[in-house]
Length: 160
Image (cartoon, rainbow, N blue to C red; front, side, top):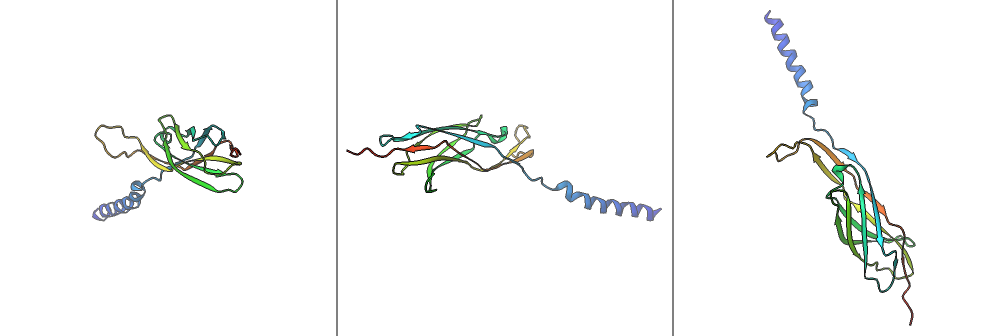
């Protein structure tokens, strides 16, 4: 009888050690993709233009829309030169963003696109208990998203 009890206890310990690593393993965040729209106004940049108004939307799951940082750059369609800008925007709760950017520095005539890049971020959702600081629910890896505007035309400076 004693051998039987010992065998059961040892078997239970070995089974517990084998099952424990799988039960304690941390799940990897679920990757979430999306799209970003970019609308620039005006589409024709005159020499007198000083700024470009930009608006758009990040379309993704609800946990990956709000509070995302959007970075901007001008891409010259002819030369392929990318000019990053210091200005950024932060998306609202529905994914919308608006900002004002300086006009491109490219000399006209030129055709450019405005590229918006949304930074990657890891979000944790779940556990709405009061006073609980760390959310231990699901994790989402909100992937980096890039989108381009329709072509912008930089006009040639007027000659006197």
